[in-house]
Image (cartoon, rainbow, N blue to C red; front, side):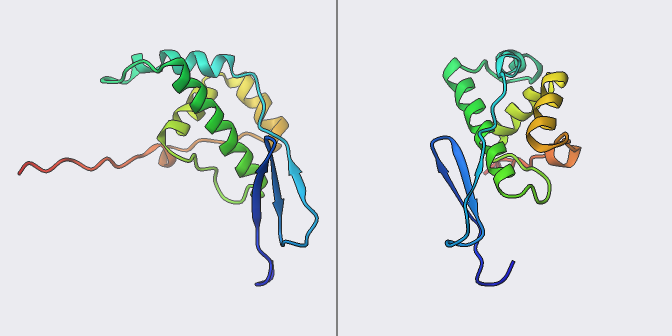
Length: 134
């Protein structure tokens, strides 16, 4: 891409549009649609596996699924360069929950990305700062 080319991604009517310059033809990226039934069920029960976690409300679950789908759509619209990185730990939890439905996850990834988005251990590590005792 030349120095005068700019990658632009814009969301309109649930479709991402990516261009390489303001004058370039726009390419529509379809929404990242899949049946979220298993993903939502996994998010409903996931707190049982993490000590100290609390159940999510249906509104929180819907929000995470929506943000996860938009994150996947942005990744595809970007040209899928580099590893997929979730926007935050909440989106990452939806990604984990999606992978707990291996058949559905594999079918979606193959259809939408042309292959599986593999999750590596290094992407799961989060550094949480410890509070200092004053």
